[in-house]
Length: 225
Image 1 (cartoon, rainbow, N blue to C red):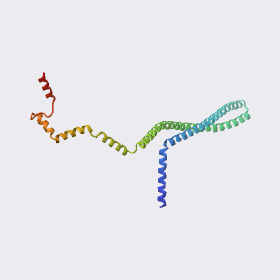
Image 2: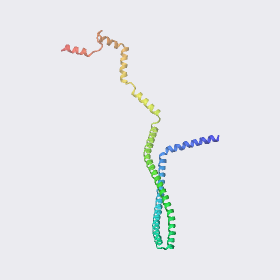
Image 3: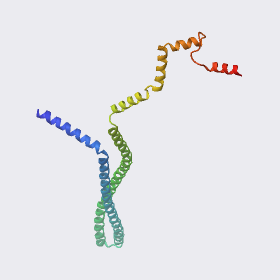
Image 4: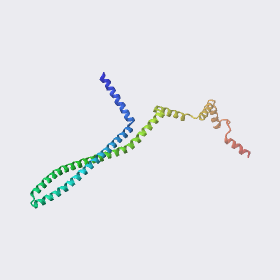
């Protein structure tokens, strides 16, 4: 029982979390982008420190190379002059410089590799942030459209209200014309009083005309002239 309740609570919590994510998706996205930009800025500082250290190590290595070359030249001169004791001291110093040079070279190489890897990572992150910022423009437009649609739905109600309104409109526009109905009613009343059959018989020449017709007026006017 407790396990079931715990599962239900976990499910309710997950649904609530999903609802909050949907509601504040744009704000969450903007915050994630700001976090990424802050991380990129920190990485730039780290990279700058590495480059400074790499340049300092390279400068030290270059200076060591010059000292090594100078000491080697002087030691060779001592050997040529037969000053073996001094040449041995020079050789010992050269050995120390070469050991130090080996360490410095390894350090410079390691710093160079780290700098290169960090540059590649930063460039990749920079491109992703640009894509995210561009996507944010589309996301804001989509979110604004959805919110406008939601406000529209709330303002006009559900589709049932629209259906009712359309049915009422169809009923109003489809209603018959009262004047036309009155004319039809007169015709029906006339037929019921046998006036229509009388007019048709008169028109066919059976008996006098029930109504004065235009041709009768013209005929009378011609006889006057």
